[in-house]
Length: 272
Image 1: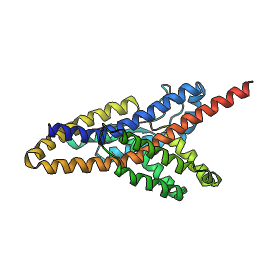
Image 2: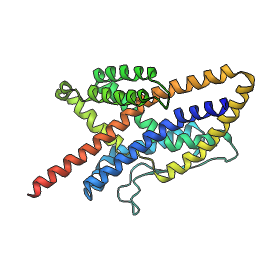
Image 3: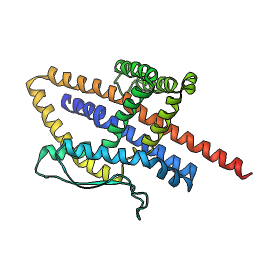
Image 4: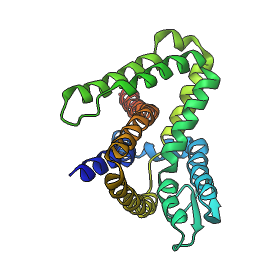
């Protein structure tokens, strides 16, 4: 039972966290399409000038890190017949465990790298906001990791709200760089959603990671239970910090939905 409990916690607070934020991003983009309608494609084509190359370069970076061979890459093709704005084709050795694990990170790369880039842009362009947000993210390590405690979810909601208020503080709106950051953030976050191919490739890697993790947990359980529990604690603590970073992507995906509502409202007024 101890093995199973630690294994589940490790998966939930690593892969599970990324999956949840990936789902939030996907739902926000779907909502944006539904709200804006036919104009959504035009807007995403425009934001894709920045967002799509970053999406594809994220895949390419992880391909290099995990030793996959890139056979073809398209950073941005707005006139594609099937609507695919960009792609990265790569090959790997299926007998190579490192390559197989790499499939997971290559698949989720746009979420991880996109979130990292948002943090970097915030640091470079609106450093005061960056400092405040980092303070909130550091606080996330104090949150409970108990699934059954309401305080766990209340803590995450409070984290989201605190980051939102830091970013959208009224005094920031007089800063030209803040507006530029917002535009770039929306362009990046609007293209973080994972494609079906990304999800399939990532799932392959996930199976190998889960298998290795289970084997390691079984070994640690019989060698030293405290060591197993220490590893689980370290993984959950680290993943809470990652959740803080990923919260930025979810927030800007939510802003995209609000942007869609604004466009819809303006369009209705213009038609009257």
